Image 1 (cartoon, rainbow, N blue to C red):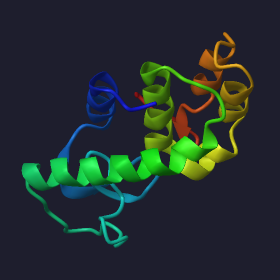
Image 2 (cartoon, helix red, strand yellow; image 1 turned 180 degrees about the horizontal axis):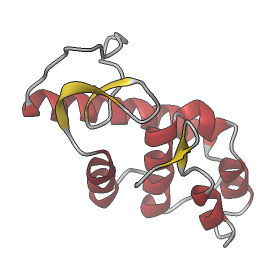
Image 3 (cartoon, helix red, strand yellow; image 1 turned 180 degrees about the vertical axis):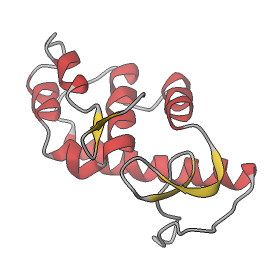
Length: 133
């Protein structure tokens, strides 16, 4: 199970790229492709600025970190597209939220369960505001 190019592109598309730190809809300082921290664990803070090359490098590093945290949580065999969707979900809401989600329970019980689609739709808000993405 790997995050394929389509999955990487999807995450980048949904996140967008901002080279100057901004507060995301959940109120966290964010930079690049939705990153809230750097490789050394330092949190993004107001006033931080990076280059496009740095944003791409940070995305690659953070994405690998997410993949390494998520793989042990998956107990069923997923296609690369399905795994990419799970990683995209966790990239957006966090690995801890994935870990506690009914989405993960359903994926592990039966990855072909048609009700899994509805599980993604439960996660459309931040601070009680429906998000565009």
